Amino acid sequence: MRYRILDGGIPRRRFLELGLKGSFVLAAGPSLLKSLGAAQGRGSGVATAVDPGLFNRVLRKGLEKGGDFAEVYLEKRISRTILLEEGKFKSAIFDISRGAGVRVLSGDKTGYAYTDELTDDKILRAAETASAIARGGFPAKPVDVKAARRPSYITVRVPLQDVADEKRLDVMRRTHQAALDYDKRIVMASVSYYDEIRGRTIANSEGLLFTDELPLLFFIIQTLGTAGGASHMGRERISAHSGFELFDGGRAEKAARACARESIAMLQAKDAPAGKMDVVMQNGWGGVLVHEAVGHPLEADNIAKKIGSFTGKLGKKVASPVFNMVDDGTLPGFRGTTDVDDEGTPMKRNVLIKDGVLQKYMTDILSARQIKTDRTGNGRRESFRNRPIPRMTNTFIDKGTSAPADILASTKSGLYVQGLSGGSVNDVTGVFNFTCREAYLIENGRKTQPVKGATLIGSCLEVIQGVDAVGDDLDFGPGICGKGQSAEVTAGQPTVRLRGINVGGTRAAR
Image (cartoon, rainbow, N blue to C red; front, side):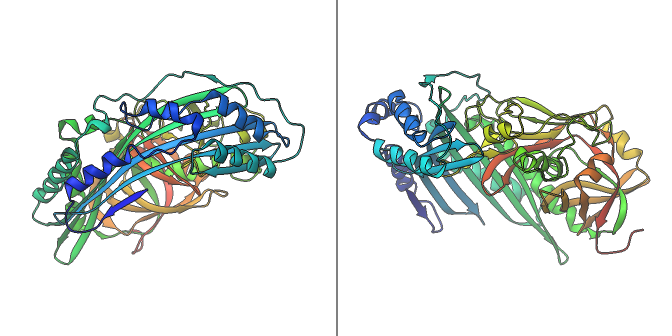
């Protein structure tokens, strides 16, 4: 169900009415009604119904035509999206979605079907369809499901469902004004607010029955600075699995000023040089480069197909000795953190590369079986409409021992990258091309002239073998990962130096 308001202001009363109505729009079959009714009037309203009898019937139906694994995934999601631009609230969207997906595995075959109607008949029909797709082999006997508990890495002090919409709008207004107040050359600011509460129930033929509820906030600020014919759009993001306390202490206003600072600083940018040079990357969101160029080739679905730069290199040296890379879905409240992945596997800290040696691939249930290794808690899906696939969670270069100032001071010349924007990566070869949103020349160990139009070009192995200094200032940034499905992730890194990487620019190297 979707409501859209697209004029210059938000009619607040209507917005609240829709929110109240939406939280009670639940469709349920006879055996689910009791649980859903009990969920109303408490919590967020997305608590997912739990009926072990129904799940057992669905799992048996899924395996009746053969197969060695069956799974049911129920999801309910309530979300709000609000946009403030040029001093006006331009749009607000309130979404409610719910449905169930049934998956059946039979060897390498996957049968998947979903329904957006949570009735017994529809879910059983989805199981019948998935079973027909994956048919073949001797049917496994499912274990009766039993409720499971897992440690939680997400805490909430101010539940999103208890926050008045006026508070959301107030944070956005203050953020917008903080950006404009930074400098008179900031001529436009926009603030985008998104929150959601996602309720999940996962049951499978191994006897698992798990339910949880995940809050998520995503806040994006953009500012446009202009002067003397030059212009630059800055961007900052805040996101976490958190309650509304995420905005305590003026965090949104601070992000607005950081965004405006970038817009103003880059107004003086000159054309970037091109050629092979040393690159120092500031800590934080620069980790998106290794997320894309190194992380995706380490996801085990491609490894199972025997393609990609890291196939067959487990236990072998693939990077410089100072390079360590981790995927950790247990970092408290982080954007890629959940209690279990979307298959019910507990989240873990997975060391992927240690001291330059490849330690592990990231797996879901299917790929772990295919390459005969452990499940790492990386089976993720966009929604009940999608089957799970191996995905990263919070992926980062682990911190080293060098002081960031020393890394810069010991770099005679090169490029200092303070922020990256978009790029492209070949998941198979690891060859990438990333655009620098904020970058500066390095001259005699100092950050000097801002430059525009710089791109980083290379391959995943080239990058991680060329890292020769790693700082002790690990930091993170939130993002959205696309791999046919979107997923919320965090990428991170300390300050690092890459020796001799190709930089695309608009003028010849000095």
